[in-house]
Amino acid sequence: MGGSVIPLLAMIVVQLSYAGMNISSKLAIQSGMHPLVLVAYRQIFATFSLAPFAYCFERNTAPPMTKRIAFQILLASLTGITGNQILYFLGLKYSTPTIACALNNLLPAFTFVLAVLFGQECLRIKTKAGVAKVFGTILSVGGAVVLSFYHGKLLGLGESKIQWKYAEKMEGGASSRGETNLLLGPVTVICSALLWAVWFIIQANISRSYPVPFTSSFYMCLMASIQCLVIALSVEHEASAWSLYSTIRLTSALYAGIISTGLTYSLLSWSIEKKGPLYASVFSPLQLVIIAVVSWALLHEKIYIGTAIGSLVIVFGLYFVLLGKNKDVDENDGVDEITEAMEDDVKDLELEPYNPFNGNGKHHEEDDKRKGKVTGRGFDAD
Image (cartoon, rainbow, N blue to C red; front, side, top):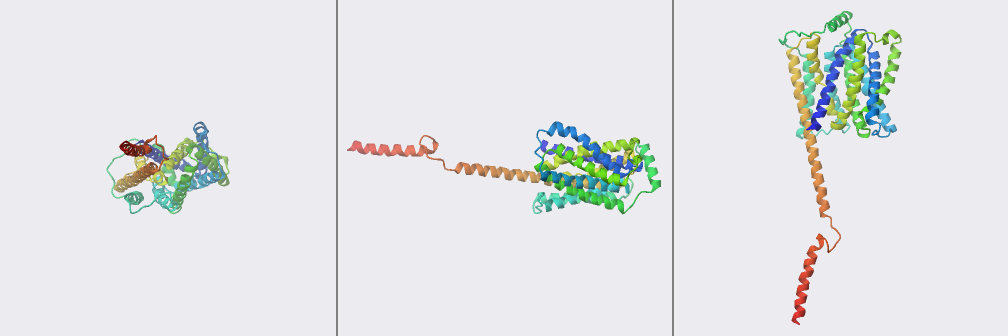
């Protein structure tokens, strides 16, 4: 039971942290912070936050670093951190948190296809587990599409009493500047989701050969810090662009680095090692549900029937994927039990060398006794 509940809770924590990052990062960008600068600060803070955990918990258990592992970590930093986060924050700048979150839910579909192609997931479409995983993935993506593009009538939930006046002020200023691009924003988010799906596949290989999530995440963030600094400095040269004088900039950078990178990438690496890349990626649609509720509560965003329907479809999709994964685990456990039983039977059937003083010579002793009795009677008769 614990083996299934802990990864589930870990993935919920990951999606909660990402939902908070979407809102705080959007407000920081609306305050004038360049997305590339925010991404660079995110990696720097993540690296410093991961270093003590990697040293304290994994310095004695980490396998030796090889060229193959180092190359895999480099690829993971380029795809899952630098490429993914730069494209996502650019998409967030030119769209809204809801749109960016919705399009990012193509991640389960991308990951499922790549995992099947690279042999990390067995499709087995003729089995119940395979049908459940395919159907659940389609439902999750379909729910995200419904939530994003179908509004319907307004739900009569009333107005939240905990509206965030600062957020309303920032959104009003951003609207006056008109920074929305209906083409560039969605395209960059879709490319970000594709790169992140590639990271899930690479991380699955890293988790098998280098199963130390804090240390591997530390090296990834360290490499990504250098990459993002070089890219950001090539675009933003002025010192004012790197200033963290604003409370929302400092808070967003710290939150994105420590929570949304340091904590979440460690949890993702651990969950991928335990459950596989599809399991970890399929929880991303939960962000939409969380952001819809938080946006209504803090940002005065209205909830429509389409939002409610899409959220329900996403939940059902997650249920079917988890059901399929559990069936896979049960089937694998059953195969392992059968294999172990067959091996035990083979061992039992192996012939032992003859020894009249142990059990396998008992029947020979009885035969000798019978023969001796017959021979004795013959001598007595003579």
